[in-house]
Length: 127
Length: 180
Image 1 (cartoon, rainbow over the protein chains, first blue to last red):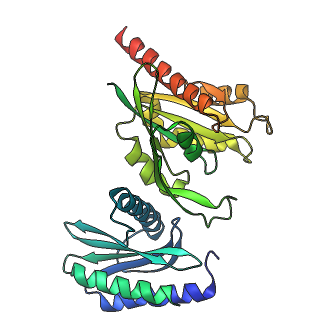
Image 2 (tube, rainbow over the protein chains, first blue to last red; image 1 turned 120 degrees about the vertical axis):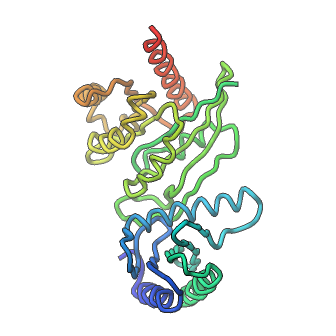
Image 3 (cartoon, rainbow over the protein chains, first blue to last red; image 1 turned 60 degrees about the horizontal axis):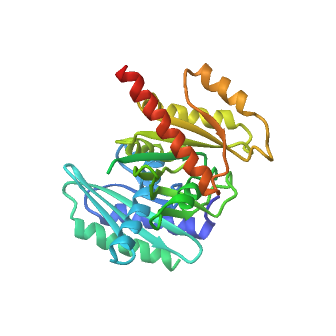
């Protein structure tokens, strides 16, 4: 197991929160920062392993872009597609860093995705 | 000024980040994160890319990109290969099956290898002499890949520069061959 049982339980609760609260949520995945799945809830055809690896790369690139541009650490990356949105949110615990990815359809409200992603991330950071 | 985009790829721990760091004239950009994979005994691993720049004596500027090594990041391989002229594949000879490792990158970068240039750089040959360079050459020949295979220590800047010069030489001869 890559993460301990407490983190794993908190991750399961976090993805459940996202799927319950975010309108139009299709998938919620929590991955290690090097791209391995920890918890997921998927209602579409998203390939979780692939999404985990991509979340890892995108979060790392976001962090790099933030540093290089002098805007500080990167908390979120938002991808706006024709058919929906993806929010990737950093979860920074003292023992491990994780990435939460939320995939939602077009009817989702990005502000709401960001709000609940932050709630889920904070709950995990203090679990 | 002539600019080339060159990739460094290869297994995790083979030295892609080290190679770029050894020769870059600018502060290298890297996207290292904590490694949680027990298969690789290293603290950090590249999740996005490495980037560095090097100007050769002839005035050619090289933009050097390092890929993540793990196969799960192969979507980054195709992104980074766009517009690249060549690839240096780093092989760690201390791994259990280095020739199988090599195959994954020959396959992953086949188009770039066929259309551009490629150099295979084998590391840790001094402590792990088998397979030897001749075995690598036969392995490549069987896969219809024509490219140099060299013994390299990527911690040495001069050796990394030699790899890049070899790559450009190969590119030059390919271009000349096409024009003839």
